[in-house]
Image (tube, rainbow, N blue to C red):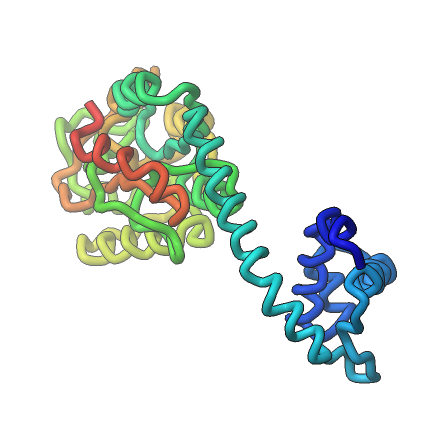
Length: 299
């Protein structure tokens, strides 16, 4: 093989060879490379022809590197590692060149709470894309790489993610039908509302928060008859206004004026929600300043 043919060698052939060497099996290597086995076999034969050596001994149990194959693998591995590091560095440069933050905001708190934060972020980044969902859905989007960070209500299942200390806390308050006698009281305890139906979510939506609230209910001697909670707040408030049941909301929702619905504080002030920042490890390294900004406060 001439030097000129070496210089024109496609690095992808070396990548294919390294994966086959790691798997010692052409079929498994093809699956890792998201290609079918016949073209991968052709690529390996092409590399052997270009190098003028036999890279693998083929047998019924799979493949085994020859001595030449071992030497080739030892030679190309530093090159492939450097390629990985180079692409990762270029990706970071490309991302930081255009600061685009994809941020999830939990709808468990009234969205006006985030207005000041959104304004400050728009001054820091070139583009801010906001996604508003319930906290469990935001975690799913974060794991799938659809958003960079999320402000969610804790506790929540966040295994494998980076979670900041909660920086915002709100007590839960009662949202009552205006037609209920209890709505005339300035403040209430859960025990007074014991016989009233409560709109509440199913445990599978957020097991950790469900159990946290249930433990508090039990300590307070509160065992409500639960109705399935609509996902949309507008629908939920409409059901409450209709007298179908009551709800528990973050106190920030008092900013909403809804005819037929009365918000009342609870004497059981220990029942509250906490808002924290959740990111992947990669996002945490890139957006570490975001946590500092949030610790300064939302308003």
